[in-house]
Amino acid sequence: MKKIILLTFILLSGLGLLALNGPVTAAPPLQVYYNTPTPRPDGRIIYIVKAGDSCIRVALLNNISEQQLRELNGITGSDCPLQEGQELLIGQLREETPTPGPSPTPTSLLPTPTAFRGFGTVCVVLFEDLDGNARLDPGETWLPSGAINITDRRGDVNLNGETVAFNEDEQPTCFEDLAEGD
Image (tube, rainbow, N blue to C red; front, side, top):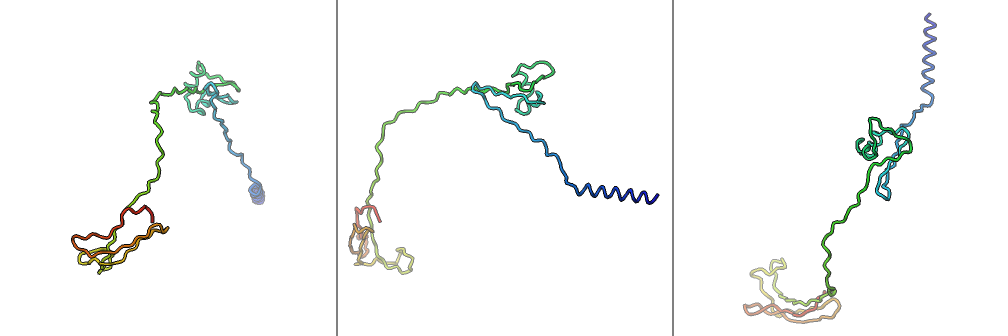
């Protein structure tokens, strides 16, 4: 008796191992394809019934209530008979009427702005910078008779001058009406 139980156990264990060694196949999950209905030229949005469709399924697929589906298609009664290939109205586009707004005011043509070349003044003061901070501070004096030369990058301007000593009547040495530039 023990031999029979042992042989049965070995046989069943072997079958179990064989089942584990074989390829495992599983059915892929069903995939639902849904084509979004496109409005027709007259603005009606139509759904074509497929095999196995019900009113609630069509309503849920198209994000409308079952009551709306029934009203749009004149379906009455407790049952909802659908036939494969049947066209169901699921919506209607409304034409938007444009709201009249203000009309544009005509304007006269304005002249095109042209670039304005400016002019300026450059004033120079030479001073003894005792603390080296590049600023004229109290106690630092103007240097008289310092040579000044102003030249632009293109060589169109070349001006010379001389600084003066500062007193209450004197002003810095200035060059006026210089054309804009570097």
